[in-house]
Length: 259
Ligand code: PGA
Image 1 (cartoon, rainbow, N blue to C red):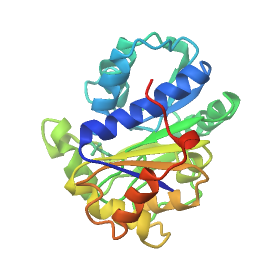
Image 2: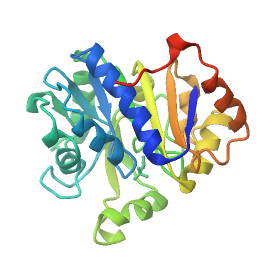
Image 3: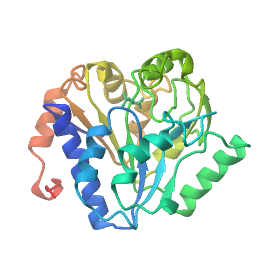
């Protein structure tokens, strides 16, 4: 795991933007795994302002609420349109999200996996982290080898996400999410976490035991997991000084150059 700690959320977003920009520039046909939520908003604003060529990029989003359609303002499809896709020249046919209104969700989940495979796999998967350690919507106790499937949200996640809906009552109970096994197969994982409320989940994921009780701890198994944190999200890490030291002493060839 590469732990990069930034003074604030803006700097963390800037680093994530540099990593993604670098991928798009060096591989204009890249397959990106994308995430929703409050955390990636700064990153998406930065990417949108960058004027990159997205025409060859393919995207797969992590998850979608079950039972709400793409036109619903709180669907992740609508979120992505509003916050990223309408600002860049990505081809409509290259955009993939699970369909929350799929008639046969199980077959749909299987087909989603097959589409990722047919696209050559995900080059870089962007992740947020839930206050309970979830990645995608893989809630605690999710199988570490799970694939895209239907999950039931915890009461805590429904409460956390109520801010996007009129009230907690309106938050769906079920979702379709890529599995932890799906996420682990992406070639690079970039987890962005900001704010004090993520500190405990981040500490468990990085320095705790590998356990399905903190699904993000599965990233300890990933060959190339980069965690971009702000100081608040990093505040419960015991070895914070070491992560700073490692970053400050990187050889020049390993540094991500500004674009
Ligand atoms: P947030 O959600 O960015 O809105 O905090 C993160 C997540 O649940 O993965």
